[in-house]
Image (cartoon, rainbow, N blue to C red; front, side):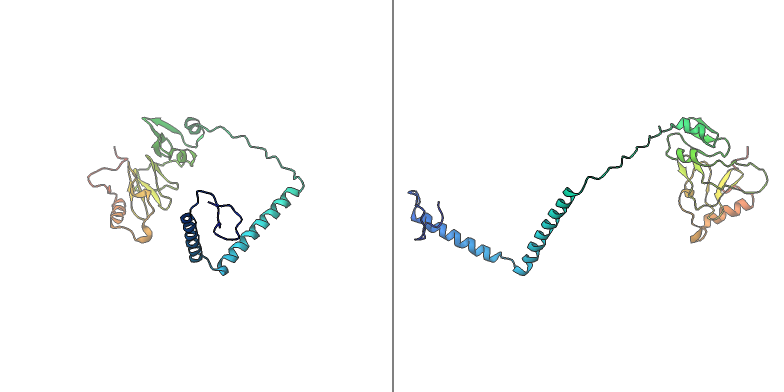
Length: 223
Protein backbone atom coordinates (compact mmCIF):
# COMPACT_ATOMS: atom_id res chain seq x y z
CA UNK A 1 0.00 0.00 0.00
CA UNK A 2 1.25 3.57 -0.52
CA UNK A 3 3.03 5.04 2.48
CA UNK A 4 1.89 8.05 4.51
CA UNK A 5 -1.55 8.20 2.95
CA UNK A 6 -2.94 9.01 6.39
CA UNK A 7 -1.09 12.33 6.28
CA UNK A 8 -3.50 15.12 5.26
CA UNK A 9 -0.78 16.73 3.11
CA UNK A 10 -0.09 13.48 1.26
CA UNK A 11 -1.08 13.81 -2.40
CA UNK A 12 -1.10 10.05 -3.07
CA UNK A 13 -4.42 8.49 -3.96
CA UNK A 14 -5.76 5.89 -1.67
CA UNK A 15 -6.53 2.62 -3.46
CA UNK A 16 -9.97 1.17 -3.12
CA UNK A 17 -8.71 -2.03 -1.50
CA UNK A 18 -6.95 -0.15 1.36
CA UNK A 19 -9.11 -0.08 4.49
CA UNK A 20 -8.82 2.00 7.63
CA UNK A 21 -7.50 -1.08 9.44
CA UNK A 22 -4.66 -1.37 6.93
CA UNK A 23 -3.70 2.25 7.48
CA UNK A 24 -3.81 1.79 11.27
CA UNK A 25 -1.67 -1.36 11.09
CA UNK A 26 0.87 0.34 8.84
CA UNK A 27 1.19 3.19 11.33
CA UNK A 28 1.76 0.77 14.22
CA UNK A 29 4.43 -1.07 12.19
CA UNK A 30 6.23 2.21 11.49
CA UNK A 31 6.24 3.12 15.16
CA UNK A 32 7.61 -0.29 16.14
CA UNK A 33 10.34 0.08 13.52
CA UNK A 34 11.33 3.45 14.94
CA UNK A 35 11.49 2.01 18.44
CA UNK A 36 13.71 -0.88 17.24
CA UNK A 37 16.01 1.54 15.40
CA UNK A 38 16.37 3.67 18.53
CA UNK A 39 17.22 0.60 20.61
CA UNK A 40 19.87 -0.57 18.11
CA UNK A 41 21.36 2.85 17.54
CA UNK A 42 25.15 2.96 17.97
CA UNK A 43 27.17 5.63 19.66
CA UNK A 44 28.28 8.27 17.18
CA UNK A 45 31.72 8.44 18.78
CA UNK A 46 32.24 4.78 17.88
CA UNK A 47 30.74 4.75 14.40
CA UNK A 48 32.32 7.98 13.17
CA UNK A 49 35.95 6.63 13.10
CA UNK A 50 34.80 3.48 11.29
CA UNK A 51 33.06 5.50 8.59
CA UNK A 52 35.98 7.92 8.34
CA UNK A 53 38.71 5.30 7.93
CA UNK A 54 36.58 3.23 5.57
CA UNK A 55 36.23 6.21 3.24
CA UNK A 56 39.92 7.02 3.71
CA UNK A 57 40.96 3.52 2.60
CA UNK A 58 38.73 3.82 -0.46
CA UNK A 59 40.33 7.12 -1.42
CA UNK A 60 43.86 5.79 -0.91
CA UNK A 61 43.16 2.68 -2.97
CA UNK A 62 41.64 4.80 -5.73
CA UNK A 63 44.74 7.03 -5.71
CA UNK A 64 47.05 4.01 -5.92
CA UNK A 65 45.06 2.63 -8.83
CA UNK A 66 45.28 5.97 -10.63
CA UNK A 67 49.06 6.19 -10.09
CA UNK A 68 49.65 2.63 -11.30
CA UNK A 69 47.54 3.14 -14.42
CA UNK A 70 49.43 6.33 -15.34
CA UNK A 71 52.94 4.98 -14.78
CA UNK A 72 55.05 4.33 -17.90
CA UNK A 73 55.38 0.78 -19.16
CA UNK A 74 58.17 -1.05 -17.43
CA UNK A 75 60.52 -3.36 -19.25
CA UNK A 76 60.05 -6.92 -18.11
CA UNK A 77 63.15 -9.02 -17.69
CA UNK A 78 62.65 -12.45 -19.13
CA UNK A 79 63.90 -15.15 -16.86
CA UNK A 80 65.70 -17.99 -18.52
CA UNK A 81 64.42 -21.22 -17.08
CA UNK A 82 67.13 -23.69 -16.27
CA UNK A 83 66.81 -27.07 -17.80
CA UNK A 84 66.13 -29.71 -15.20
CA UNK A 85 68.45 -32.64 -15.22
CA UNK A 86 66.73 -36.00 -15.35
CA UNK A 87 66.62 -37.79 -12.03
CA UNK A 88 68.98 -40.67 -11.64
CA UNK A 89 67.60 -44.06 -10.89
CA UNK A 90 68.83 -46.00 -7.90
CA UNK A 91 70.81 -48.34 -10.12
CA UNK A 92 72.62 -45.45 -11.84
CA UNK A 93 73.31 -43.67 -8.53
CA UNK A 94 74.71 -46.90 -7.03
CA UNK A 95 77.25 -47.18 -9.85
CA UNK A 96 78.44 -43.57 -9.22
CA UNK A 97 78.62 -43.94 -5.43
CA UNK A 98 81.88 -44.12 -3.46
CA UNK A 99 80.66 -47.42 -2.08
CA UNK A 100 81.04 -50.74 -3.80
CA UNK A 101 77.39 -51.68 -3.46
CA UNK A 102 75.89 -55.08 -4.05
CA UNK A 103 72.24 -56.11 -3.97
CA UNK A 104 71.03 -59.45 -2.64
CA UNK A 105 67.43 -60.32 -1.71
CA UNK A 106 66.42 -56.64 -1.69
CA UNK A 107 69.31 -55.73 0.68
CA UNK A 108 72.01 -53.28 -0.43
CA UNK A 109 75.43 -53.75 1.17
CA UNK A 110 78.73 -51.96 0.82
CA UNK A 111 81.58 -54.38 0.33
CA UNK A 112 84.09 -51.90 1.79
CA UNK A 113 82.49 -50.36 4.88
CA UNK A 114 79.91 -53.16 5.35
CA UNK A 115 77.00 -50.72 5.74
CA UNK A 116 73.63 -52.23 4.79
CA UNK A 117 70.14 -50.94 4.03
CA UNK A 118 67.02 -52.00 2.17
CA UNK A 119 66.74 -51.32 -1.55
CA UNK A 120 63.31 -49.69 -1.06
CA UNK A 121 64.30 -47.88 2.13
CA UNK A 122 64.44 -44.04 2.12
CA UNK A 123 67.89 -44.23 3.75
CA UNK A 124 69.40 -45.80 0.63
CA UNK A 125 69.99 -42.33 -0.84
CA UNK A 126 71.88 -41.27 2.29
CA UNK A 127 74.04 -44.37 1.97
CA UNK A 128 74.69 -43.76 -1.74
CA UNK A 129 75.72 -40.13 -1.18
CA UNK A 130 77.83 -40.74 1.94
CA UNK A 131 81.57 -41.31 2.10
CA UNK A 132 82.89 -44.83 2.32
CA UNK A 133 85.37 -45.66 5.08
CA UNK A 134 86.84 -49.16 4.91
CA UNK A 135 85.96 -51.40 7.81
CA UNK A 136 89.25 -52.75 9.08
CA UNK A 137 88.92 -56.22 10.59
CA UNK A 138 91.49 -56.96 13.25
CA UNK A 139 91.82 -59.82 15.66
CA UNK A 140 93.67 -57.73 18.21
CA UNK A 141 91.76 -56.33 21.16
CA UNK A 142 91.49 -52.82 19.82
CA UNK A 143 88.23 -50.98 19.08
CA UNK A 144 88.05 -49.31 15.66
CA UNK A 145 86.51 -45.87 15.36
CA UNK A 146 83.62 -45.40 12.89
CA UNK A 147 83.68 -41.71 11.87
CA UNK A 148 80.44 -41.68 9.85
CA UNK A 149 76.82 -42.56 10.74
CA UNK A 150 76.05 -46.22 10.28
CA UNK A 151 73.24 -47.63 8.15
CA UNK A 152 71.69 -50.94 9.21
CA UNK A 153 68.44 -51.96 7.59
CA UNK A 154 66.10 -48.98 7.32
CA UNK A 155 67.69 -47.09 10.20
CA UNK A 156 70.57 -44.66 10.59
CA UNK A 157 72.56 -44.06 13.73
CA UNK A 158 72.27 -40.65 15.40
CA UNK A 159 75.19 -38.30 14.77
CA UNK A 160 75.70 -37.67 18.51
CA UNK A 161 77.05 -41.19 19.12
CA UNK A 162 80.78 -42.02 19.14
CA UNK A 163 80.67 -45.29 17.25
CA UNK A 164 83.24 -48.04 17.52
CA UNK A 165 83.54 -51.56 16.17
CA UNK A 166 85.01 -54.37 18.23
CA UNK A 167 85.09 -57.90 16.83
CA UNK A 168 82.02 -57.14 14.71
CA UNK A 169 80.04 -55.52 17.53
CA UNK A 170 78.99 -51.89 16.90
CA UNK A 171 78.66 -49.76 20.03
CA UNK A 172 78.84 -46.19 21.30
CA UNK A 173 81.90 -45.43 23.38
CA UNK A 174 80.03 -42.77 25.35
CA UNK A 175 76.67 -44.27 26.35
CA UNK A 176 77.45 -47.96 25.75
CA UNK A 177 74.45 -48.72 23.53
CA UNK A 178 75.21 -51.26 20.82
CA UNK A 179 73.89 -52.72 17.58
CA UNK A 180 74.48 -56.02 15.86
CA UNK A 181 72.04 -57.03 13.13
CA UNK A 182 69.44 -54.51 14.31
CA UNK A 183 69.71 -50.90 15.39
CA UNK A 184 67.41 -49.64 18.12
CA UNK A 185 69.04 -47.48 20.79
CA UNK A 186 71.64 -45.95 18.49
CA UNK A 187 68.88 -44.34 16.40
CA UNK A 188 68.00 -41.89 19.18
CA UNK A 189 70.27 -39.19 20.62
CA UNK A 190 73.20 -40.25 22.79
CA UNK A 191 72.33 -40.22 26.51
CA UNK A 192 75.87 -39.70 27.78
CA UNK A 193 75.07 -36.09 28.74
CA UNK A 194 72.48 -37.39 31.23
CA UNK A 195 74.86 -39.89 32.75
CA UNK A 196 75.86 -43.25 31.38
CA UNK A 197 73.10 -45.87 31.84
CA UNK A 198 73.88 -48.94 33.93
CA UNK A 199 73.34 -51.21 30.93
CA UNK A 200 75.76 -49.15 28.85
CA UNK A 201 78.42 -49.34 31.56
CA UNK A 202 78.06 -53.14 31.64
CA UNK A 203 78.50 -53.28 27.85
CA UNK A 204 81.68 -51.19 27.98
CA UNK A 205 83.06 -53.26 30.88
CA UNK A 206 82.39 -56.48 28.97
CA UNK A 207 84.13 -55.18 25.84
CA UNK A 208 87.08 -54.05 27.93
CA UNK A 209 87.32 -57.57 29.40
CA UNK A 210 86.98 -59.09 25.87
CA UNK A 211 83.64 -60.70 26.78
CA UNK A 212 80.67 -60.57 24.37
CA UNK A 213 78.09 -58.19 25.86
CA UNK A 214 75.26 -60.39 24.62
CA UNK A 215 75.05 -63.17 27.18
CA UNK A 216 75.41 -66.67 25.76
CA UNK A 217 76.50 -65.54 22.30
CA UNK A 218 79.85 -65.34 20.55
CA UNK A 219 81.35 -62.31 18.92
CA UNK A 220 79.91 -61.60 15.45
CA UNK A 221 83.33 -62.01 13.84
CA UNK A 222 83.97 -65.37 15.47
CA UNK A 223 83.30 -68.39 13.21
